[in-house]
Image (cartoon, rainbow, N blue to C red):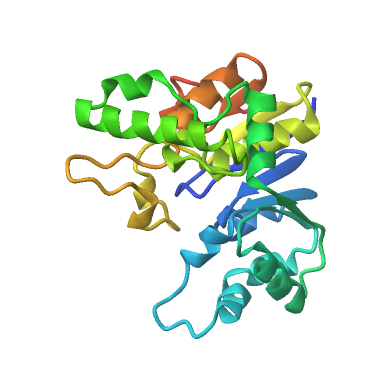
Amino acid sequence: MKKIIVIGSKPNAFIPDGDAIYCANVSIVYYAGQVSRFKQIVNLITPKAIEDQVPQNSFSKSSLYRRQWKMMLKTSRARLVILKSSDADNMINDLRHFGYDAPITLISDQERRKLVAKVSGCDDPILSADFIRLSPKLKVRYAGSATSIILKRIFDQSKTSNAIFRPSTGVISLLYAIAENGADCEYVVAGIGLNNRSEYIHTKLSSAIRSSDTSIPHHVFADRKILRMLSTKYRITTTEPELASILRQFTRR
């Protein structure tokens, strides 16, 4: 059975061997040594993940791409999939300029939503039982946000929902891998978690919603619901202990 590995940027991830690896955002850089073992490499990113890396003394986005993606530029086997935003075209131009000649695919927000719905059965805004446990103030706030995006999409389907109601790039990478490889494969999730995401090696405080009474990390509720749905439909294991209540633990054979 073909084994597909899907990784995120959570520190100290154990990444087993497999037939292909799908890397979320800059995990391909942080785990470059492990990723280089694979014959088939796919990297799903958002331009925002690159912007978060900008050093205080950076003098241009081009210099940033050159430094941050030095390893990826050397790995011409890595196929790049960009979750499209207004910065995607500039990013592609810079990557091509610095020698990245592997295939690049753009996925629009609408295509992302269709991917999530098709593979997981969940369409955003994704609501889950986690919202029931929020304070009354937050319930009202996010109920209003979800209702607003539903109404706006009556006139414009391109409207993007609050990050609370849609999955992370890590989970989208898993969905994309499943869409490409089908239900007859084994999928192993590594370096993707639900806790302490603001402490991930590439993430800043901006990844969480700032609130006077609490902070809700982006994507966590949606990720948890989607992973539960996927666990009932596909062969998915994980090397992350914190996901043990949702996914079966990976065991070395």
